[in-house]
Amino acid sequence: MRFLVPLLVLLLATPAAAEQFPDVPARNLAKQELRLPAAFTHDFNVVFVVFARNQQDEVESWIPLFSEVGKDRDDVQYWQASLLGTMGKALRAIVEGAMRGAIKEPDRRERFFLLYGDKAPILTGLGEPDDEHLLMLLVDRDGAVLWRASGPRAPASEAALRTAIQRPEMSAPPTP
Image (cartoon, rainbow, N blue to C red; front, side, top):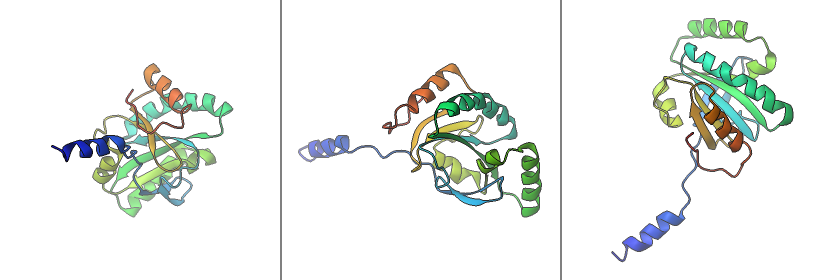
């Protein structure tokens, strides 16, 4: 018992490790090979992690918010990371060509990442085993996850995100 009390005090006094965005290789639609989260260049990086094509509508529901926020803030940027799984080079070229055809804006192409490979380790690294909906993360420039939500834009999630980008000292990701 006398060892248990000091151990409990130590555990309670030790800050919990912040959740980190996993270190993964990526390719953007501007044909650059990069690593995430190192490519996130802003103080507040909102990352849309997309698991399926039908989740693009969920992403698009959030874009107007960033047009509004971006007018007043140069420290907030949004990014998209599409988790495509394992595929051969020929299929990759077709998929990337189609995506570049759909996304014409050069700055958006630079912020649109494609993640290839086994999905399971990436999902585990993101702490999000459910891939039914878009995963949205607020990540600082060091890769610490400050906030998370899933699915389309909703008033509660939007309010929580607006609060999170006002509080850089946040270290634990709240659940909306």
